[in-house]
Structures are given as structure tokens and as C-alpha cells.
Length: 203
Image (tube, rainbow, N blue to C red; front, side, top):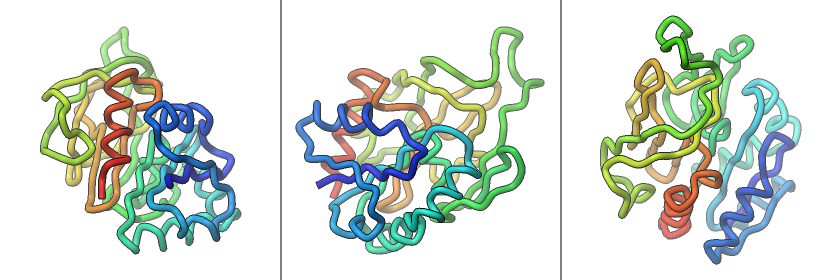
């Protein structure tokens, strides 16, 4: 059973529908005490980093997520959910994340963008596989995914896929049982569904 973590900061229904389309068993979970009963979890996220972390802490989800990750079960962060896996973000100030993976989240620099490139980075963009991972199994070396974000991971230490928007940035990451995807797989058609299917199969 896969749980989608409900902490008032995520686009839950579209992720749930994508998992159901793949034939997966899925439930939206708002009770932190129940997280330990799932085989794997998805941490979605829409909005600002600081507010999302505040919601995780107030709801009791933060400690339950940390405990789940420590037990070695698969955890996938999507978009803002991926960013929350890291140590810190500079979105509207300085905010500490879950600290499960080393790295900081920084804003795109307008000076590095072409005139036709705006913030947020929104739309389809090419992703390049940088190393093999269960998350990208059976995918081509390059593929398109759908992005919506203004901030990005500022290092490549755990990157398994990179993209470019003014600068190269990590689009997909993995550290042991922890996975992150900056774009939205649930909005990325067949490639996105394949990534979610790979996550469902990971053990």
C-alpha cells in the first residue's frame, strides 16, 4: 500500500489518480501515526517551502516521515516535496527542511536566463540521465518532463537526472531509499507514469 502524505500543501488528487491508473493501491493519509503502516510514501508539495515545513511540524508529519525514512522504506518527494527532503531553502527567508539529503534550495537567477525565459520555470524541459537508478529504469538517456518551480537544488551530489534552465540543476535525485523529482510526473504523460511505476516496483 502506498500512502500520499496530506499536510495541506500538496496536489493530492492528481498524484492519487496517476497511481490508480497504474493499478497501484493508494490512500491519502493525514494521520501521522499511520505512516509506519505503509510500504512506501509520496510527499507531494505545492506552495512555499517555509509554510510547507510549518504544516509538517504542526501536523506531526515531520517526525513520522523521518522515522519512516530511517526504517529504509521507499519515500518519493515530488516538486516542493523533493525540496523538503533537503537541509535548507532560501525561499522567502531561510528555512530548514527535513535534512534527509545533503543540499540547499536556491532561486533561479534572472541574470542567467535568456530574455524569453521567465521565473517560475514552467513547461516541458529535457532531462538527461546522469546515472542509473531504479527510478529511471527502462527510460531513454534523455526525456521530457513537465516543470513548475522557481527554486532548485544547488548541487549534484545525489542527482540521477539533470535539466537546464539558465543553469544546470538536479531534476531527479536518489539517496538509498529516498527519491526526489523536481518536475511533476503526474503531469508528464507516459514518461511521468513510467517513473511512478518504477517507484511502485522499487524494493
